[in-house]
Length: 484
Ligand SMILES: Cc1ncc(COP(=O)(O)O)c(C=O)c1O
Image 1 (tube, protein in one colour):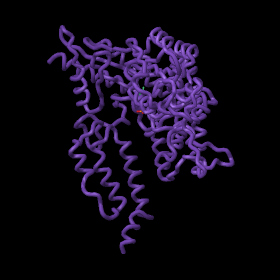
Image 2 (tube, rainbow, N blue to C red; image 1 turned 120 degrees about the vertical axis):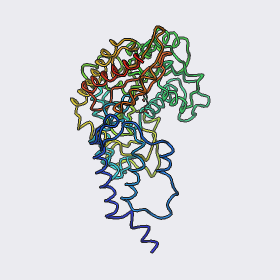
Image 3 (cartoon, rainbow, N blue to C red; image 1 turned 180 degrees about the vertical axis):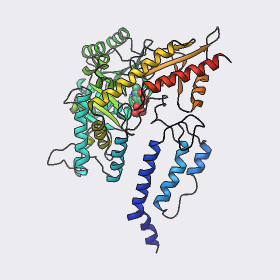
Image 4 (tube, rainbow, N blue to C red; image 1 turned 30 degrees about the vertical axis):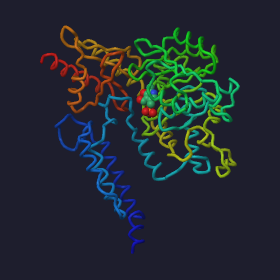
């Protein structure tokens, strides 16, 4: 009796009913557009509507003693989760650089879960490993990076950066005569990492995970766009002995700016430094012929970390650690054990390129989105987002008291709003009003001492019409603030 109760709900028809409900509901959820507050039923909010207390209550309750019926579990999950979801798949989401999970990627991801594959080594899932191998080749081609480079599929740019920097750490130490694999960091000469003073916080985390402390992180001042000041970097490099890594940025989080890559690549060569580029979203400019020139020189780097779940719109989680030197990459990540046997056919062993053994078969969704968009689809989307950001910059710059802080070179804007003779910064009030509209999701940040509204144009479908509507909304709300 007890046995029946345990087995039945997770077997056969009841299980497929749960999957069917999830698929139908997911499809309907993605088809419902976000609407302004109070405008019609059967729509969903771009902002969470539930409080933390309500969410805790909805998800809460005791851990069940006995198995629950599958469809009911999924129904309860939907009811508990949806009031707490954020509409980052919607065209009006501009707060952070987050992609919109392409529907074909979502479909591939559903299959990935259904198939339950583990791409640790080729023999665990020849299909998953081969999809990854092919997608890796397509990425190198699309991004025009060294075709014989290696690509690790990671959770995101944070772990992609970690992976690339692990390869860098091992290699610069090896060049300095230190056998890292044998001796670790003990007795190693300190590895110095040169970063922009406002490098993305995840880079500092990755450096720390690698056992490199603040004392060995050399922060280089940046210009108004967030680019490292090259003469300062040059001086700092020449004043520093020992193994060196330069950590540059393509696509600054607030401004979208690109470091001066030709100069940085020269400096890396002169100083025998490894050049790594955090290009979580900026790397995708290389896939858009009209934007590619902005990345010139970046291809001379040793490694690049980027995301699939940002501009490529692959569902979470998806990042890529791309390394010019596959040997250094594999040395940093490799795991060998007698039971993890190589395929006699010589297929890809993904564990050589990312810091995990068992993990999601991330390659399927990447392969599917690259096919669904194709080279032209990716280029069109990147170009459209960049053109939309430029247009928004032009429209906002004309408004009285509005300051666009950055040169709009990519998809990012940093905007502040000022009232009165003293020009008081009232950007937080504008953020609140725009969010109350219900179509938009915004957040502010502090940039070079000013509170700015960060505008990322990254959601898959966002286009010129959305941006014109947004500019009209900003105009209306800004007039209301100025006249009160
Ligand atoms: C420039 C930059 N680097 C790194 C990251 C970290 O990426 P992820 O959140 O995918 O790990 C981000 C995320 O916003 C970013 O914008």
